[in-house]
Image (cartoon, rainbow, N blue to C red; front, side, top):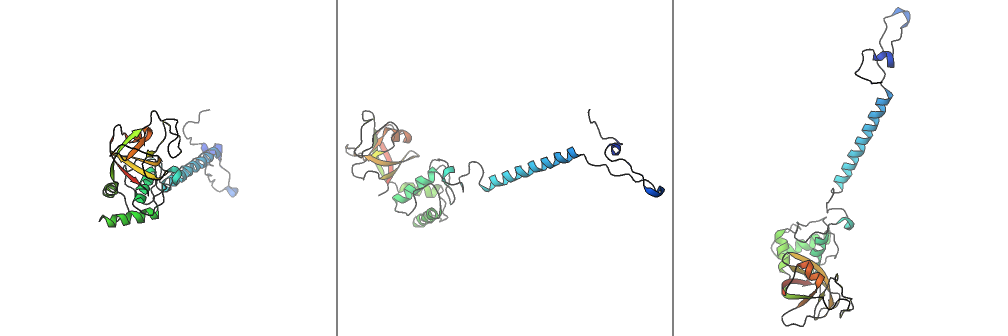
Length: 239
């Protein structure tokens, strides 16, 4: 049966009139509320409360895609220089920042979290280079950090060597990230930069032996940098 619009006699169905003793004028009772409507509004209010709680929790954690306060497991793998970095950030670009600061003898952990030691080191770096010491790695601070990376010539290798052991004992493959250097100890961490791209790698081999060339990159490393020919790069090893 279709309910239709409200009826004037609804009180007859849900709460009829009752006589008053002594002949007094009858009093009309208020219509009773329908139990199904009460249940409906109770469920609706519960759903609204759940949505509000979920929204509040999401806002408190920084929301989807936020890099702050999410822990290393939620950190984005962003390219160093794609955004300004500050206290509470995390990600691959923060790790690159750490490697670069460490190459300059700053005491930072080599993880992905921009925490207090990172903030202190960035402020110290900014003071030494006469930059406003706010602890934020913006364009100016980032460019100054990049200029601390020495320039040198690099080439790459791979085909013909895949499947063989390197001088440091690594089996070279098409997906191997690493560099060859004549003197740096095996396992030395080094950050490479070429035309706005960065790669973190380790020394896994000896070479190159061509005069004037300091670094020999594995094929995969060169491809990540988009290095196709022998060219000048920036490299910052952590000694």
